[in-house]
Image (tube, rainbow, N blue to C red; front, side, top):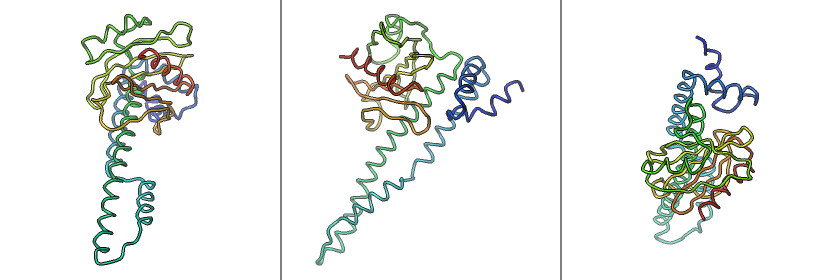
Length: 248
């Protein structure tokens, strides 16, 4: 099999654990090999399913410790109703704590799926549906395809360049996926309607646990933005700032 040696390293590549030079070679190969691109996409989807299943009913050690600490800090009650109120307090704490944990887990799952979309797109032989460096060509392409409008920033006098865009789906919610480049690093910008996404995602910069990608996410004008890539955190923040400025 011509690609057997490449596919033997596919999981290591998807986990971003190859040396930088090998990662570049693998990127080039996957972009030009339909077989490896399809296998990469299948493995990304499998990893996402396994991760979701493994996290479904497994509270973290931090959550357990936090709940135990809260219970220990509850003042002791004496009297005829103490034996009734204590279990009720524990149950209420468990319900509230579980709700908070599930919300956090839901956000982690969303961020993980965004990372999967980024990897799958870069592994695809056709990463964009509309190929253009002109924002006035890319933006109108989305009209009628997604249920919202958005603005793209002016990139003149910056190090960023627009490569194009495509439609995408997150939790079955349609959105826009733009791809930018800075010093040979490709950055994905995902845009969705905030109200259509589940859970509370918060705002700020972070690094995903599953990959070495940097991510910045925020809500603005009823839309949820995700800026992700293996570029430096400063580049991710700068591109996010350009988007924030273009929406004001």
